[in-house]
Structure formats: structure tokens, C-alpha cells
Length: 325
Length: 263
Image (tube, rainbow over the protein chains, first blue to last red):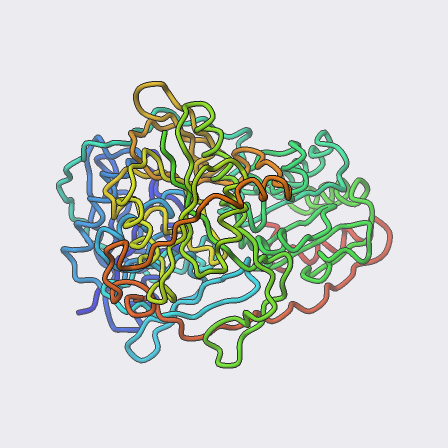
């Protein structure tokens, strides 16, 4: 029986939403080859019980590597824990989430197993008996389809591309003993980002602003729109405003910032430089507001509004609030 | 501190329209404008600043053909004292693991305390740094946005993690760090700076000099096989929404509701 391994991610004992997406993608591949889906989750005691819910998305078996020293990400220990499970399992493919942790882990695990890695996949197809992986290159100006001539095939999948899809079954949970590794890199502290907004790369709705907002103070109209749209809405920014120091680098959307694929992207008073478009053109629906009717953002937007953001956005926030009741 | 910085010459996405070559197996590379990978500028700047604080040398390395010399020299002009070009026909067509294998051989050939790479390059794969570290069995940190050196003891580094948070780590040297944009402001390189490094000898090493067997790298060793390239279809032009501010807001709310954007 061919097996696919999905790597789940947790923070503070709670599974991150992208774990559902990785399992969804793994289920899709497994169904293509008539295989089963295993999940590995690394964390403190109890994480396996939390991961059992991934059965809803098609996981057949959860392998929980539990240890009190593994509650927070530790590069060497997590690499070993996952590489050990990959080696023990004879997997057709191993899927990582392309998150901050997944991007750190996947190359290490691949190199340790002497196999290649295809990162940031946006589509996975079984053709014949081969897994064809699609991924963007050159700032999203081109895509490449590739195969990996190795077993297992190690792939990281981009957030918000493989929408979580239910395929319910009763997942079994097995707890695996862990050996935390002496580490040459130790996490000392985490400085929380400003505000309580989710990460722009993982949010389903993004409200992004550009230089046309004229002053960092004016971000309050975007924050108000984000609040009106509800929970889970992230703020984004163009490179120009990040370079100007108006917004933190973590909010930068674009080729040298975050690449995002939300269901809804508001581009407010940003022109749409090529380097910004590279980061958001795969959003499902793009709404652009700009004074300049010739702004390049209108070439990728689904809906365009030529107008003054300071008039349109507050009004829109009010209307959305009314509509939501 | 002896620092090695890995740089890559890439087609500049802002300067080029990307099209697919006649056989579909690669992009059309004729007439492309090349420049250094943007992330690498930040890595070189950070290396030069560390060397200015701690003493020691910065070496710029690139896996490339002869065309790579210009980029290596441009990066050297930012303040590196040495360069190294890793060139061999056998290196062409390397995948990420192949490139990491070549760089690891070069790293073992020197005595470096620190290796910096850009967090990613034109192919967005963001993997060579992590693989290089694994091959060397050195600790590694990705997406680094802060590096602090102590006179004695581990480095204190910051990583950009989810949600705009910064994770502070201690990491022992030797180590590999992949550097995120925004960590510093890369200095300007003028013609004078490039002229200053023009006379520095640039060693070139091939597979034999590095002790790499040719079949483990390049096209021969690549396990990533490109099946097809394509350019995404242009989105249709935006539907422009016109009218009074009130009408516009109403229309957007209707659209969002229809698409499930308002719950």
C-alpha cells in the first residue's frame, strides 16, 4: 500500500489551520494512487489527541511524536523526529506546509535523507504513476511542472491553495517516543508582532495599502475595514511603504516579501508594481481602489474602483458592518 | 570572523518579460537582463557589517559559468576581500541539492565561521541554505532578520516567523544563516568600487579541484526533473465599478456577499 505523509504544524498545542490543507492535499494524492494518508505531528503531550481531528480531512493514521521538550519548534529535534518517521514509513510522498517552520524544516529533512525537495507547490497531480508538482518561478511570471526522481518525494505546499476539504474518517492515533536532540541553536524568546492580526501569508482576507495613503496614520482606515470584515483578516503593505518605514517588513506583500493567496485581496492606493503583483496575483478575488485609472493593479484586479480611498474605504467599511448586522 | 556569502546571478524579474523557450524545457534566456539575486545583496551587506565589527574576511562565492564573474565582483565591491567562482560544465543543470553539494565542498575547502545565503532566489525554492547546513552538519537558521555578534560565544539572531513575530535564537558557530530582505540597507556600489576590486585575483574551482564526482551534481545528479514550463494566463481586465461612493460601496458589498466574503 502506498502511503502519503502529511506533516502537521502546531503552535502552543493547537493545530494550525494549514495542517488541514496539507492533509487535504495528501488525501488528493493518496486517492490518485490508491494509498493511505499518515500524519506526523511533533509537540508536547496531548498533541496526538488534537491531531485526531485531521481524520475529518482524510488522515487515516496520526503518528504523534510527543515530548515535553518538543512543545516549541526546535530545528534539530524536529528534523530528527520527522526524518525518523519518514525513513520508517516507506512513503511515496511527504508534504510539508510552506510556513516559517515548514520552510525551515523541509530542506533539512530532504538533505538528511539525500533526496530533493520541491517547495511552494501550488498544484499536485498524479499522471500515470508519477506525481507532477506545479510551482511558481521568476516571481510568479512562469510556472514549472516537475517530477522528483527519488523516494520519498518531498514537497512543501503553499498556504491557501489547497483549500481544506472534508473527507471524514476515523483516524487512529499512535504515540511515538521522542529523543530531543542536543541543539546548537536554541530559541530564547519570541517577540510578538504588533497587533492581533493573523499572518498575511496565511489569512483568507487581506487588506493591503500603498503609498497613496500618504501617511502611516491613515492606516486606520484599512484597520477599520479589516475589523469590519471580521476575524482573521490580515493587513498587507506595498514595498514602498515598508521601505519608508510606515509598516513592518512582515506585512510586505510581493516578490521580496510574502506571497499570499487569500480568497479576497483589497489593494488600496497601491499602484501594483511588478514586484507587488508577484506576491498576490493568485488571490481568488482582487478588489483594487486607486485614483489613477491607468494603475497596473487594475490589470490583475477582478473589480476596480477609480476613486479616492479616503472616501470609498470608510463608506465600504460602514456598509459591510451594516450588511453583517 | 571568516564569512562565506553564497550569491546567484538571476534574470531580474522587474526587467524581463518571461517567455518559454522553443522546446518548453526552459524559459527563453536570450536577451534576458541578469543581476544579482536581491536577497543576496542583504546577505553580503550583513556579512560586511559583521566583518567590520569582528574583524576577518568576507568571501563571495557563486556556482556559475564565466558570466558569473561580473556578479561576484560587484558583490565583492560591497566590501568583500575575496571571491570564488565554482565553474564546471558538470555543474550545469544542478538542482537545489546539487548546488548545495557544490557549495558544501567549497565550504569544506576553507575555514569559515559563518555562511550566509539569501533567504531565496529567482526560483523561490528557498532550500539551498538549509541543505548546505545539513550536508555540513552545521546548525542553520532561516529567514534571519537580525544578527548580533558576541566577542565570545554563540550568535544572537532573529528570525521572521508567522504573524510578524520575531523569534530570537542563540546559534553556535560555524553555522549557516539565510538572510531576509529588510535586515539592513545594502550599500550602493559605484563604478569606483567595482574598479577597486577589479585587480583582485578571482580563483576558479572545478569539480576536480573541489573533489566532487561529476555524476552527483549538475544534470546527471539532478533528481528534480522539469516536465514543462508555462506562463500563466493573464487575468481578464478588471470590471470597473462606477457611480457615487454610496453606489460603489453597495455594489462591493453585494459582490462580497455573493462570493461568501461577508458572513
